[in-house]
Image (cartoon, rainbow, N blue to C red; front, side, top):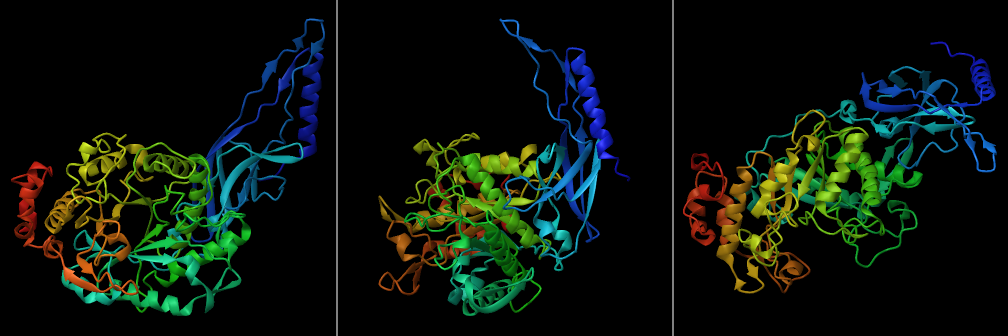
Amino acid sequence: MKKKNLIKGGAAGLLTLLLTAAMGCFASFAYDSASLKTCTVENRNTVVITGTAEKDVPQETVPETLEDGTVVPPETEVPDDGYYYLFELQPYETGIGSRTDYAAWCDKTEKLKFSLPFSGGDSDPRLYSRFVVALKIGDTYQAISAPIYVTNPGDVASFTEEYPEAMSKKGLLIELDMLGDAMELGVKHTTINIPYHHIIGGNLKYHYNGKDYYFNEELIASYDKMISSFSNKGIIVTAILLNGWNDAHPELHEAGLAKSSSAFYYGFNVSTPEGYETTRALFSFMAERYSGADYKHGRVSNWIVGNEVNNNKNWNYVGPMDLASYTKLYEKNFRVAYTAIKSRSKNARVFFSTDYEWKKQNTNLQYAAKDFIDLFNAGISAEGNIEWGLAYHPYPYPMTEPEFWDDDQTGMVNETFESPVINFKNLHVLTDYFQQAHMRTAGGQVRHIILSEEGFTSDSISRGKVYDIQAAAFAYAYYLVDNNPYIDAFILNRQVDAITEVETSCAFGLWTVDMSRPDKVIAVMPKNIYQVFKHIDTRKSLRYSEFAKSIVGISDWSEVIPGFDPEKYQ
């Protein structure tokens, strides 16, 4: 392709402007628009961006005549130079600004295609970039398209083993020193929290993208032991990536963010160059180490970026902001995590989690899960649709009572997409929502959904110990999930009661805990739920859940679970 003489093009435009002015009207040089459709890595050596462009037809405008007879010529736009330019932006860049270093250019055509060289490496910054089409207007470049990101980072991954197939959906938050008990229970899924602020700093060197980073070797060794213990026994591991406060590494947080007394964790930072580089190195390190390539380290199959991220105040603090700004910020963070993880392990799945407050009034710190999901989905779909998934937390409402089947009486749970709360009582509403065309992946599949945290208390705030109701609630909930094809896993919180939770009437464990030992988790007594959990996905399932029918108020599970097939559990 031969680029035309820009001076000649500019002279022709100027001549046209003068001629139209002489005729008493002006031609307005309206700007074109472009829409980028795909952005993919091809053959591990090229990033290919395609799209379409539409030329605006210049409209003749008439001078305005004022009351005193003064003729005011219409404003005219400065003409562009006749070419389209592709700019590459880093996640922390807000726009083209004064930059002139475009990555590629082409003649004005209706169909656009740009090809950029790519190193093939999973640390290549180009894999994380976003791209926009621009026009040169005078001495500056102005974007005429929405941005688009690479959508197939998994195609550069060296670890390509298929996603493991679970024997059932039964999962549990496991105490590592009770792994034997978990195996006896037949656990198929588990979660593990990985707080980044504890990991960074130490003597374990990691070389990434030309820089050396250092991590806590002792802590990483403990994760190696934990994750390998689980995954090497066939348990599917879900890691929850968290970002606590770290005074020594302010780059982990949004620039200028002050520590908050109400925040347990903070949002990741890719809004500054240093924050972006450090954050993606952390993501890449963890994704590489636990991709499954090294048996001694183990395999993480699911990654959750943050916890209950529709709650800015407590779990993903980045400072007060409106929902749209908050969601867009999280999108940037999620894309960096997604790219780092998928470029290391092709078939790993990447999720974000929300609480069960599906529809509520949004503030500048806490947002309705539905509104957050809608904006996130729209933003991701518009800028390069990737296969994100949802990790949902459908606790009973309120959490201090184990029954969920009567939660509609609270007025907070109903059968519509506008329900204030979605939990086990109306769980199908969540999966019905995700079956809609606009919520699906680019390939038309329903997105992966896991229930990564939920539990049923055995200590009712109004009635005291209710071990039988806790067990019945689990059985009912498990059958609901097991008969819903759009939910992949049900990970119960937790194997052993947590003292801090018990103190708030949230005794979710299969075991009671020694309340006199806040320094250590010591299991004391298995509850009624223990045997139900153990057998719920076996041929003894119906026998161990029979008692629950009278508690729920039914004579057959098919009364409350459409399509329930008892032969599945025999």
